[in-house]
Image 1 (tube, rainbow, N blue to C red):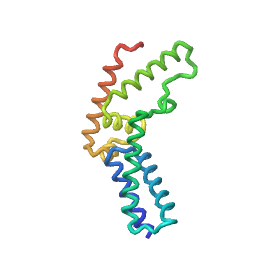
Image 2 (spheres, rainbow, N blue to C red):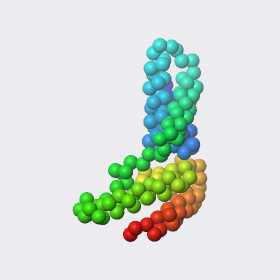
Image 3 (cartoon, helix red, strand yellow):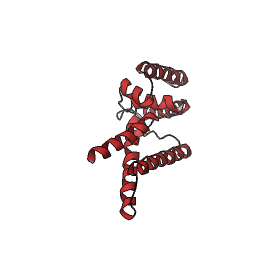
Image 4 (cartoon, rainbow, N blue to C red):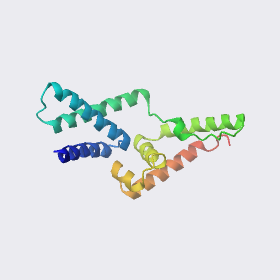
Length: 161
């Protein structure tokens, strides 16, 4: 029975990944759905656990999308820090301004391009993993990253050196 559960959860995770979710987000949504199932089935029998989990994952994904559209895409600045701790105050301020400009540039990319760029450049995903998650060829991922990088470089051009 454990194998059936695992394959069901893997299928839900794969479904989320095909729809552009990051691996961590997909894992979180599947785990949340599983917890909701476990709590629900304590009080009421669940005739079709697979359908229950699939619907719960879908609803959680929709809720997450709605929340993201309200508060915007989150990028943890601590993870993207470009600051040199030994730099003087002027260099620190300038680095923060560049980082703020980079955040604006990232927000100007379309959702799929931004997700691919962040998955590969910050998330450590390989091109082949990103291709699978975003349903593109490896060449498509490479071209997307090149195009996004060039676009960001143009938008950053002329920004204080």
